[in-house]
Image 1 (cartoon, rainbow, N blue to C red):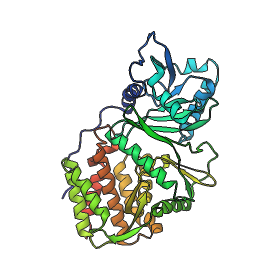
Image 2: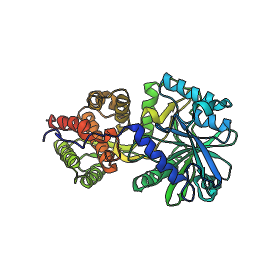
Image 3: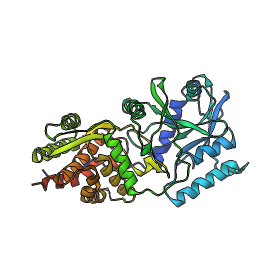
Image 4: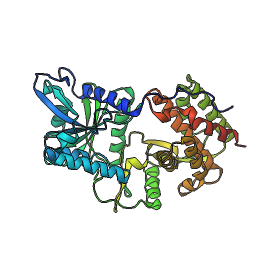
Amino acid sequence: MSPVKTAPASLKVGDAALRAQYLQEVLGLLYPEPCTTTRGARTPLVTEYVVVPDARRPRLLVPTRNRRIAAAAVRRYAEPQSRVARWKRDAVVAALRTPGASAVLLRHRVRVCGDAGDTIDGYLRDALGTDLAISVHIGPARANRKPVLQLIAPDGETLGFAKMGTGPLTRRLVRAETTALNALSHVGLRDLTVPKVLHAGQWRGHQVLVQSALPVWRPRAALAPDRLVDAMREVSGCCGTSRSWLATSPYWAELRERLDAVSDRPEGATLRTAARSLVDRTSDVDLRYGAWHGDWAPWNMATLADTLLVWDWERFTTGTPLGFDAVHYELQRRIQSTSDAGAAVEATLKLAPGLLRPFEVTGHAAGITALLYLVDLATRYLADRQAEAGARLGVLGTWLLPVLIRRVEALS
């Protein structure tokens, strides 16, 4: 077995262009015909949005209903990851609050005209039984990208967030998150706080989940490593744990089925060969299995003095090797700070023994668990067709597969 020599063609379309294309797609989903965004439409106005930062690089649609709602849409849309990003956000908030300033500094608008009777705004108002405005997050290209809406009350308070599954994958993920949040609401988590389900249903064939807004705007605290580990351990055991040999475990049986489902593609066949070689060489490894969040990353959580806020539970899964969340968090943290994703994988594997020790995964089992995590993640990317959707990390042959193959071949 040798590292993959070829991979899907490099992604040629920039993120900004993909976001601009997705903007039009989202508007068509949220405001279907007879609504239109065509300039000069003579039909009644349904709603109007400011495009932030502009129509060429859209990231957020901000309702212009009033200045308080518009400012709240930006202020509570996401927590900036850097000082520069925070400064930019505050500048946009200031412009939206200042009469006349937004018209000069934020010139790109989208006017939706037509019949307001069957739009997402109307559906959500009826579902929640209250007046509201929505702002729309325009995310980066990913197979699991979906409309994410912030629901804002007339006084500027955030009522919640809505996700809308519009295709086979995203509908499944929205249903999965609904199930996960309902299950987690009954386990009595102590070290972290998760959203509550406010509404789940369907609109025009799309799967809709409305969840409560976590208070990300409250003052932040430093993230102590012990708190993060304690929270991850709590999640890992929240639905019970089990123990078995890897080769005869339900986890391997399920993963093998997922690998078979993607083996018709070159990278999938290579991944399946690597995974089977890994299990053949380590079949007598005894592992413990529990739950994991599935995408626990710095951008899916916030640290407060009294709790950790954790969201995006659509990948929550039970029966996986303990410690997957710790390895995933470390890898995503490193990928966020470097352009060399392969080096991030190598560095994460070197740290695996220390990352997994708090989960009582030690010795040979630690290295095997980290490699199984890579197989699991790669299988997800292939099943979701992330590369075809334009996601940079979806091209596995350029970063994850070569490292995985080298490490498997090095096993005694």
